[in-house]
Image 1 (cartoon, rainbow, N blue to C red):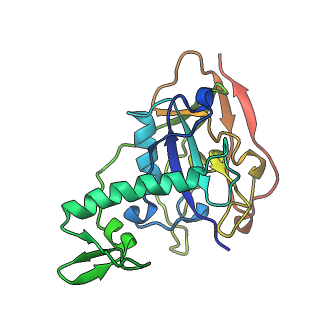
Image 2: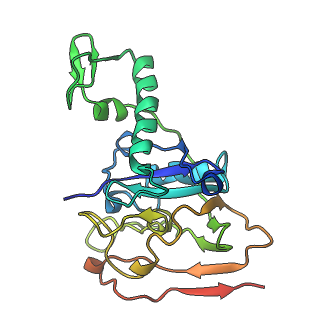
Length: 238
């Protein structure tokens, strides 16, 4: 079956207190995306850009994970379920502001009602507006003291056959918890790195801290596109 993911910013005391506190999570449906890992893990994708912006500003250097519903529980806590509760609360506030009310006889696909019309939580989420967001250069892992560059979108994002070219974004994959336990997961080049940054303190920026000099050089490419094996490397910059 398909496995679903949500990016989750955790409280700064998470590791010390052995307690998971969800500080921020976004709804993928609000950004017209599916919930499977390889339905949204691409450069320029608006769902991923929301996390870039969060990790570059209010939550710079916070513990972070791209949590899945099949992953093992961290510190005996269902991170994915906690993220959904957080998202549901956010969605409820937005729905109320849009004039929707909770359906007292709610069932799946009819959680809200407005003027006699019943809609799903997903349909409400799809009406959530989102703003233009900046692009960034680096993802920084403060625990491992390593950074990785965010690939740039190609100037011409179409191939010779008119197909749109997708570039895999390293943030969801490096921070994914539970990869290869369900449909829609990542299989391809450098898959041993997937999840290796999960729950670490992560920041996104256009400048690097003075004490972060080691670069992870990696390209993720799915097997269907010819990706296989490991060819990543670490380079120390003076």
